[in-house]
Image (cartoon, rainbow over all chains, first blue to last red; front, side):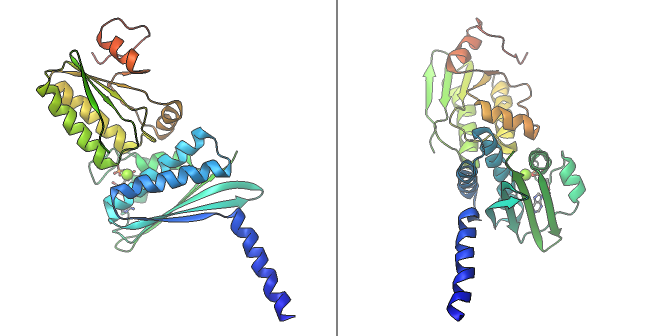
Length: 151
Length: 124
Ligand SMILES: Nc1ncnc2c1ncn2[C@@H]1O[C@H](COP(=O)(O)OP(=O)(O)O)[C@@H](O)[C@H]1O
Ligand SMILES: [Mg+2]
């Protein structure tokens, strides 16, 4: 009895693991931006995204991970294969414990940069993904979740 | 990642053959701005075929580079932007603004030789 009850969830989680490939890339320096976007591209291609969509996904990861290096110095990018109402997709989560974004609305609209950049990263990312969620607290950090579904 | 730079007649040709970090791109920018003077070149062709992505940082760095080279009296033409990279740039709302582009190296040289085989966008 106990054995059966134990085996079932283990099997289920094993199956789920195949459908839900994940990767976490530590972001501590500019070279990690390249690593993260390359991992993202490979995963996107494996999930069935086209070459063009995979380049788009790599570009999104590049923007998010650069922001981590630039504004928080350290953090991570997490990539998760996901499904939602029968659709497969990729979830990109950038997480840092940096200064937080003071004015999210302004950062999203674009053209606003505190680093002399183009200020087009977040607004571009928002345009390219299907879902974007920004969770940020001043002095605590930022978690950005971007989802892209297979069309 | 070291980017090979070739001198051909009055031009410098730099070919990005592998993925570059932000740091590599800045080093390349500074090197080309300097070498334009060293070789007394009148044009720089930057082949970006090997770039995996063109994001807001790459676009800004290339725009700055072309502007700096212009201030040194030479022109820059960027060649080799791949279709999926072009697609992403448009999606992101990124533009190279006044920086001229051409299909490939051959067209880049044609641009400078003033006998374009195709229609090019010109800086001036
Ligand atoms: N992870 C982050 N932590 C703190 N601030 C951030 C973060 N990401 C973005 N920002 C803020 O949002 C602004 C806009 O970001 P972005 O659109 O990527 O443009 P850019 O990086 O060129 O400034 C940044 O200038 C910065 O002030
Ligand atoms: Mg940015």
